[in-house]
Length: 110
Length: 110
DNA sequence: CATACACATCGACAGACGTCGATACAGCGA
DNA sequence: TCGCTGTATCGACGTCTGTCGATGTGTATG
Image (cartoon, chains in turn purple, orange, red, cyan):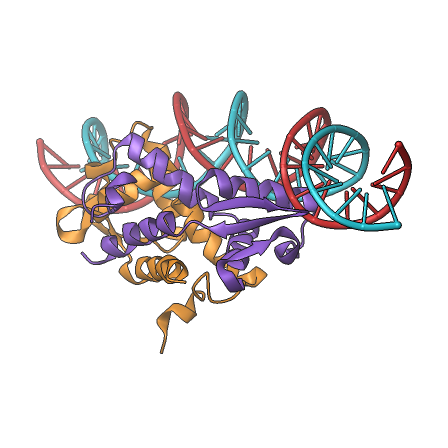
């Protein structure tokens, strides 16, 4: 079940190399902004596991800024998007999320 | 007594409020830098669960920069430090780490 | 075709952040 | 007391990042 290996080893297993740290930091960085965290949480908690941009864009910033942050979350691999007619739907990428979680929980279980 | 509530609810439970997002983002942001991630991993993976600064400061940046990043990790609540004689020892804060892990894994288990 | 709506991209700007050398502080040994 | 070593703080600098208004792109509808 070394699905985590595809990303990076648990933080407590051994010191991360520079490359591993670079990759892993990108994902944490994506969740390191309050607006992005609210957008992500809004998508993750939406019924059906996906949400239209119009459903989640009430986070106190302008529409271009919302779009900018959603792009960052997509580039980090945390969200994926799909256009259906007029609207664009975002959904969480569960595998990546689970990998990040194990990175931390396994680090805590020392 | 859900101890996670002291921090924030799982990301998929409901949309985070602005305050919750602010608090949670601080922790993710702390792990969102490659150097800090390597320092954190070095401490977490060190035998005994703690490490002297001199043991982990070989991450390719100057000594003041190492000190700066360790301070950030301390301020985020992820590490604690203690001076013993000449050296300063850092150790991981397991409760906070576990809370972050559950934030993510519970979000994935939709 | 024209208009309206949903979302993305562009260009610009202020503030935050990572980095460094110089320097200060804290223990320890001579 | 003096000097040495380990760590923290300071001040400065260049770069990255979040934000906005203006504009572009795609889709439906009249």
